Image (cartoon, rainbow, N blue to C red; front, top):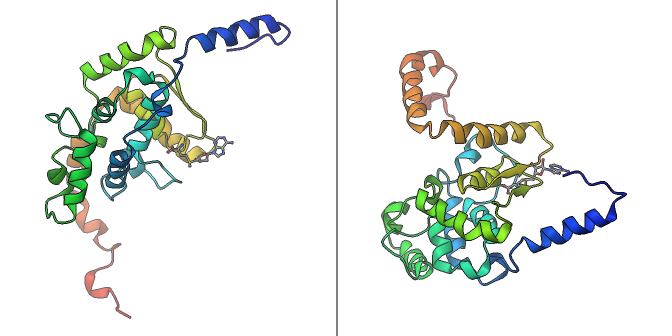
Length: 236
Ligand SMILES: C[S@@+](CC[C@H](N)C(=O)[O-])C[C@H]1O[C@@H](n2cnc3c(N)ncnc32)[C@H](O)[C@@H]1O
C-alpha cells in the first residue's frame, strides 16, 4: 500500500485501523507443545522425509516443516481459539483416531522408538505430515477461526528472506495469501515453481515415478559408462 507521507493523519488512521484488526494475543505467545513438535522436526530432518521443496536443490538452512507450520499457524491464530491438540491436529501430527493428549502420544512413541524395528511411519502410526494436506473441513475451520479477528480477511504470510519458499508453500497449503522475498535467483526459481505452479498442478509424484522408470529402462546402457562400476572402486 502506498502512503502519502505529507498526510500524517491518514497514516495514523491506517495504523490504528490495522492495530484494531489483529488478535490481542496469538497462539505463539502462549504455551506450545514444543517437545512433540521438536520430535516431529527431528523425524522431518531425516533423509527422504523432509519437505519436497528441499529435494529440488541444496540451499541454506531450511527450517523443518513442523517449525514452519508452527510459525504460520501460531503467528496468526488467536490464542483463545487454539489448544495443543488442535495445533498438532492441524499440523497433521498424530493418528486421526487420537483426538486428545496428542503431545503425550508423540512423546510415548518417541521413547518407544529406540527399541522398535518398524519403519518410522509404522511405528508412529500416522503418515509423514509433509505428505498430508489439511482437509477441506480443517481449511474451513481455520478460515472461520481467523478471518473475523483479522478484519474479515485471511492475513498474508510474509517471509522476507524466503530461500526456496517452504514458508510460502505451507502458507498457501493452509489457505493463506503469501509473499516471498529472496535476492538469489536459484532459490527464487525453486520458490516460484513451488508457490505458483505446484498449487495449480497438484501432485506429480506418480508421473515423476513413471517417467523415471521409463528413462531408466530406455537409457540405461547410455549412462552406464558415466557411473563408477563396483569393480573400479579402489580401497585405500
Ligand atoms: C536461511 S535462508 C532462508 C530460509 C527460509 N526462510 C526458511 O525458513 O526455510 C536465508 C535466505 O535469505 C536470503 N537473503 C539474505 N539477505 C537477503 C536480503 N537482503 N533480501 C532478500 N533475501 C535475502 C538468502 O539468499 C537466503 O536464501
